[in-house]
Length: 112
Length: 111
Image (cartoon, rainbow over all chains, first blue to last red; front, side):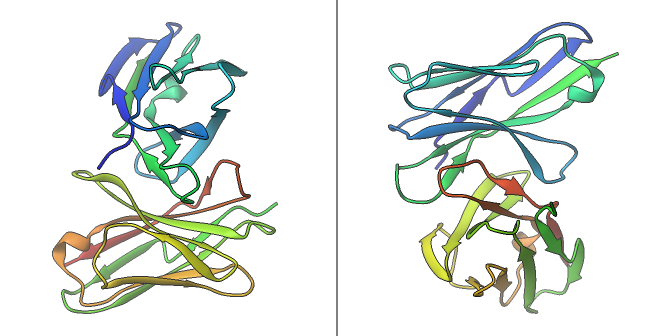
């Protein structure tokens, strides 16, 4: 079963706009990660946020985590055509079992 | 620093055959995980190895197996291939508590 569910499933925006993707999960976690995947290739790690953190930044990426709502969001600011990809959240489920469960992903298309 | 290397990149096999996929993790990473990705099921966890020990296994039939060697390289094997095993198989290595670094994957097609 899926631990993480991303919303929306697909998103299409114009270059320069911001893109926001959300992830909800079911059980308590140690950390949550976001990944990007281009055209069925391997996934690229973007950000890891721990359960005691509320917000984290990396370049144009901003991730928030709300453990009370069991949700996270990924914001990509000033999007570029190169940001076109699928984005996945992954949570350690349950904590300490040495495996991460991936969500269903959000397909982002940035139009030039 | 070399990334995670998966071989082969592409593979075509016939139903009933078996296949072995290889993964070389980043130097110093002792944890190796395998995932299967299909359009219908998304990314599904197969197993995770640490220091040659399988620490966790996903909900896959016994036809799917793996192992890890003393140099942390890992292999996974699928026996008696079925059409539904066609997928992108991804290997990832990590330091404990850190994010994964994924390989480019092996795309397996079963005909």
